[in-house]
Image (tube, rainbow, N blue to C red; front, side, top):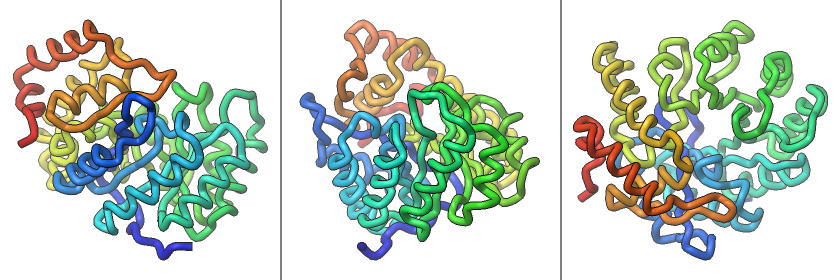
Length: 308
């Protein structure tokens, strides 16, 4: 096993890194390097790789392992890197945890198992086995009901946090501040990251450690500014920045989300790359729609100027 090279995940804005792909669906390594370097230079507080925005579930186990090794080497300990290891079954997910550990990861996360209906006991055992695969790592639950089809139950969440020492917290991608508040009512041992770009400030006020943000790929400065303003007690400034982030998020409504995020990167002169089948690309009409939405909002246009 490689010596761990990534520091632990603590707090702040964690970019849900997109995976730049070529037309054949293979990882575009030079583009990946450029995107990682951009995130490091712009001061994000960590990276979350191979999640929903990273198309992790569409890549092979081999591709996922190689990408983790490459990103960890590129970051070289400058930032925490959380590795998403979710899969449809426990065996595959546990093997991905082991691969991440061998690559030198410090932090892993996983959505619950997919497709079938599961009992809370089955979900508990799934996460326990993932933790057993590398108990030396920090493990995070990942609740994304819009993609998975169901939400992690509060009872199983509380039990996992209480009974499995290496499970540190949860990434919650829902839109409910009430849900985030409830986590802290359940236990004081949980660390929460919101995955919703629209409620970052509210989540911070309620005690969240930070946010895992897809749009931070495109405008990392905007999201780190929200976090910094909140930390300094400048709530009016933080609110204005949060509203800008919400308007940015609204430009993607009705469009294929991952492809739209990648196209916004392209508009800034950054390498977004293609999506992997069966995820759709943006049509030329959809590209025009997205450009029009961005350019008619002067505040957004200011944040989305080409990167020099």
